[in-house]
Image (cartoon, rainbow, N blue to C red):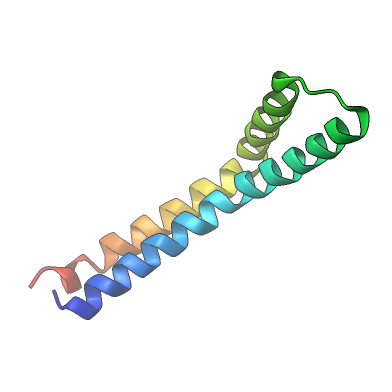
Length: 89
């Protein structure tokens, strides 16, 4: 296994991590921003008001994007196993 191959595998793994985490992070960010704007306009500073909607949004994102996340992770894993002979020399 050459250094270039290791770097390529690491890059693919990191790209997959970013792609797989993006839906949950983006929905959490959008909901967090909306809650912050709501808290700023109403001057309600309740801590649970900030966390509960974000948790629910991330849970909803897991439910909605779950099949796609699983398919993407399986495709990457299958590609790794299919090219296993390239990695072992």
